[in-house]
Length: 336
Ligand code: SF4
Image 1 (tube, rainbow, N blue to C red):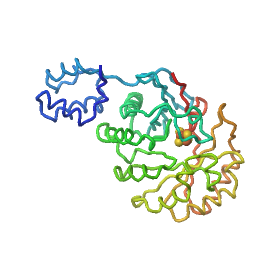
Image 2: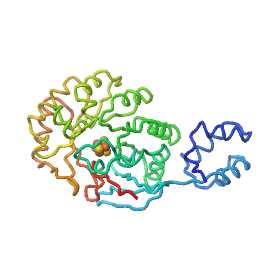
Image 3: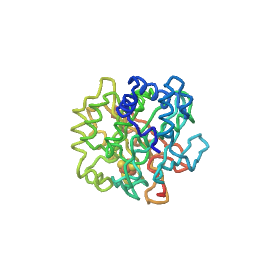
Image 4: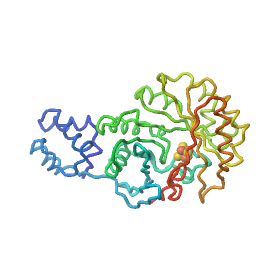
């Protein structure tokens, strides 16, 4: 039986029309599913009875199944979801001061091959469908209160699965009522995809996973730099239609003795000069799969203050959930 969440809005309207009901019944159905998160067609009281019995016969209401859950003392919780084909993806719920952040996955694995990332080690199994992405959000919404921020920073490179990611953003924004300003897409900077996504969703927030100020180092650790080198990223950042008062986030994972010297900080500062950016420094999260180390706190602070002296807004992001391997670069679901 087909999962009702695999219906996009256009399909839902044509189902409704085919049954002889007015198209607005598709809107009503989506409100029940996405906004009220009702899991039983009988509770959708404003849908005609005939429509409800058609839904019963042909569809199931199915969320991705949570098969494991790990909670850290700071409240960060990682969920392992099993998809219909038994593949698994992870999402992380992070309580912040004034809101909840959902870190969601867009692919099973990833093919970008970043050398410092645990997810990269097993390659790409497949892209997620839009409803497998929205399914993570629906499921986490059941476990959260208050305002929610969504970050595409879990497993996968979202712009490498742009069609389904676009569809999922549309659903999250339109039917779950989450503003685009509360959605951040983090990317190694697949430039064509970035331009496309910003054209479609000008208000979405963008984070560029840069990590190195020099081409040769970025290429060594992030093979995608051969196709989209730093020089091209900077050129595009200058041209992007970023709204006034908005800034692009530059993510920089600090690794001990790899990219954490003050010389690196100086090069980074010079590279970003004139761009409307803020810099997130992410001290590396060590894991058993990879040899890289986290720099000392002293080194992290020295790096940050060097950039601050160059007039950048710099934030040090100690990833939450380190104990449960839910921090950045640590998501690595076992394949089922
Ligand atoms: S850091 Fe992101 S883009 Fe790079 S391999 Fe890991 S998941 Fe993929």
